[in-house]
Length: 259
Ligand code: PEP
Image (tube, rainbow, N blue to C red; front, side):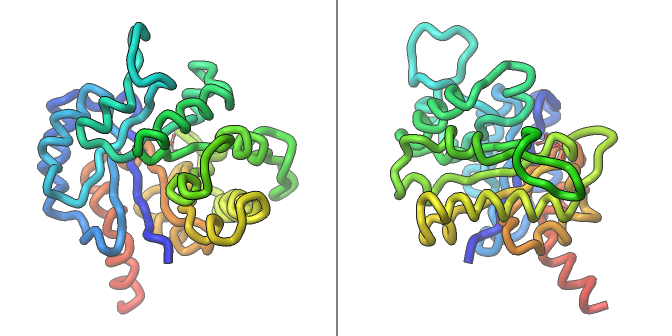
């Protein structure tokens, strides 16, 4: 049984004061970590105060990015080694916005994934569609070339711990909606490829998240899909009330079924 993972991606939103205030609003309303993992990826400067506040809680503080190198003359970069020393266990890598605005190639993402995995920080590896490979509702989506390139060089043991995400750019951000069929199909294809190339054990263990216009109204539906093990949430995660509702989707769903 794969443990669900709910990840908030705050992107370039919230200063330190707002990030800390958010934590104080939500911390005692989050579910027990035996049933679900919950994480927030804030701006880099907010990770430290947030780590301090969440030390004895179930909430994971996640880095939105990290460098390919552990240290050296790389102005403006973030060392995954130092993130680890600070108590960070997860780093998001290869988000479509990193690829689009900062020209991160599969090769760069792969180097970052290896740097993180080799030092014991779990990469949350994002993939998004390109226009050549899968067909859903008469549209083509290509996700698999990225997948194989970014995972190159990982051992089977490392692969089992990696977290993948499928985030179709057609569903991310303002003006877009979640397409449930595409969400499951994308995650299913990722798992099928993992099964084909790395075997049943890895495919059954690896967690695959869906990202794109998830909100309190559709989270239970998408989490109900067989190949979706979690979600990456942008906009809706910035609101503390919505975040608490989504983190508690299991309880809310059970209550709705009872009524
Ligand atoms: C994202 O960019 O990772 C994302 C999922 O954004 P949103 O939820 O706002 O569509």
